[in-house]
Image (cartoon, rainbow, N blue to C red; front, side):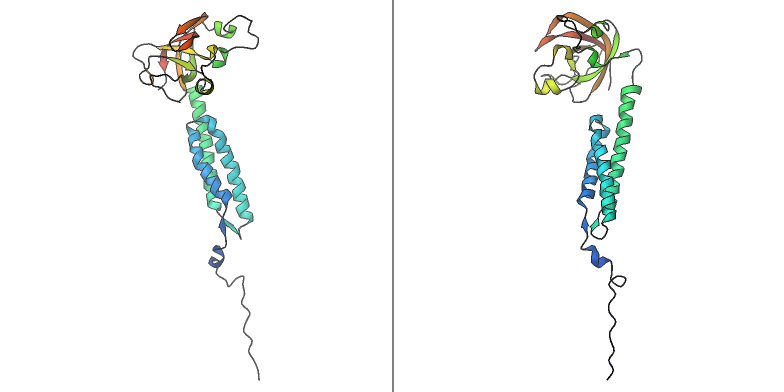
Length: 230
């Protein structure tokens, strides 16, 4: 009696690939790269956060390579690519905006001055309250970049104190005396308090004697400002 043997199933080509899809997991690296890419959008407005974009690019590349190597068990390659694209976009946009605001979008007629020239210097003579680099700017029209010092009044300010950063004023009390500039706006110009960095231009007055001001020990610098960025 003859018997007919049944063919052995072929597991490679005859099995629907969709049957394996349920066993493939989404790469956590790819998901993280996508999330970092989304978070990096804030770097367009805040250049100090650009490292988030760099981290997103690096993680996205790592995730894409990892998924490619483990296609049988992982998915998420498109997510990694989207994360890379977002991070690259924010890196380029954030850097371009920073260069434009810091070096191109500047008013004419002002000497751009780094706040560091007003601060205490290592070679500053003992007993001299302000550095020589600040004294050389007395009476000049300068453009300073800084932040409005927090005060009880927050809107329509015509007079306020400008500081280079928020590190000391928000977490360590009053800033150093050479970290403060009293700004007096001319004309109908006003500013509102915010956490945005401002560009303010005007004539700088440097005092060697401390000038008393309300709520603070005093200042050595005054800026009669006729320019404020919007």
